[in-house]
Image 1 (cartoon, each protein chain N blue to C red):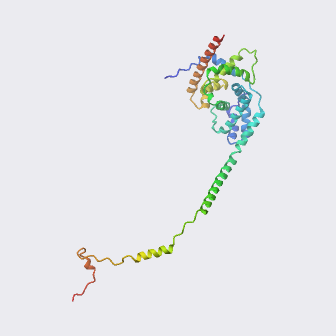
Image 2: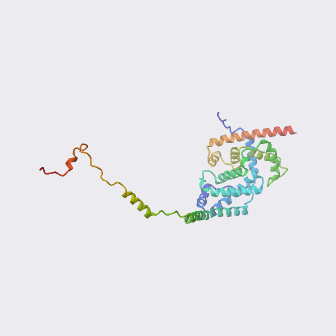
Image 3: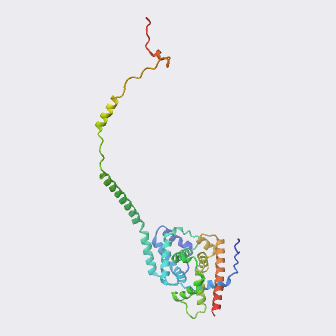
Length: 194
Length: 126
């Protein structure tokens, strides 16, 4: 499901900003499945994902006046979702030690609400990738998720996060570099285990 | 310290892996129960400011009333000070004044004020 273009949303947005809950409800109906999919992808638990989506919608209602239309509504909501998730994790969201990656990987395998079929060859690699993203510092995790999972452009990410496009580019580069190093380390650990 | 210049060709494997992973995420169907529960919470939130505003006023008024009552009670229960005897005080002051020397001060000697004699009434020379 794709979001309608901003022009189509503007009347609803204007009403919602004035406190029209019905207009806000209509806006959220269109975005909820995508938000839920993303929340499930990084929560791995349906109940946590539901809580996260609910808190995101409430946060969106409270701060809708701050949405200026410089990015897609979904991108803005996705930033709120990421921030809510980060808040729910608390202090530990700042950085996960690499040692926990394997534990997360195995935990994710058990907790994923919509588990991938076991015969899919790259399912384990995908799980590892998600665990590695979770291990990134919050500011790097944010740009990776926005760029690849919310399919936002660099300029759009910059607008949504309130930072410069250059900073987005730099964070993206550092995040990818960290992911590459983590992957190398995991490969080494796996090699030494076998 | 200069930051490395990002090269879009770097990490192409990782970029592909991330895109593949993103494509694997499937959208669940619209969760009506979740949506309605959330909207109920939002509507209750948007209805909150008025009672909260009234509550604030009620609290302020109650606090003010309590303060007034406490002040009144305190004033009522304060022990009465002994009143000074006003008449006796006045009489004593009057006596003290009466006892003061009211003799006029002697006039200044002529040598202090050479013009003092001019103030005297003119005398017709005999």
